[in-house]
Image: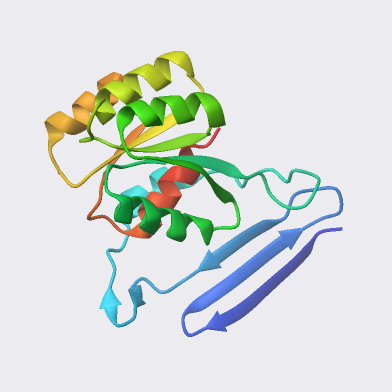
Length: 187
């Protein structure tokens, strides 16, 4: 027997749930297309991006919740790392397993923590994000690296891709796209 529920949770919002005994529960949350926080407008993901990020729901782990996506943050700016960590810790299915201040530390922490996803700044001291990505993806092919930079340059995006990055985002993008990208890359 399948149970379905639809609820209006706010103006323009909706939540749809579908479940059956022994099967996974599917949840569909709809929100208005103009997203604001504290009066400031956020970038809205494009239709193409939303379609590209659509994935199967995470499998239930059979224990105390859903499969957790383990994320390592690598950025030489402490305030950026801490801001990303704070934002990601609000997500029930994402766990920050480490923070690295440079590429060398990112490589060492990736070996130690075995993350699912690494958010990798491109420009960092000691070892840059491109070389760190190359080493991590060569040694741990199941780890997905998402390049993250303040630069919207095609040559940097291509260099990260050539090094093995699965995606490249700019720091000027919206939070929802970053979170969707993390979820879509988790294996």
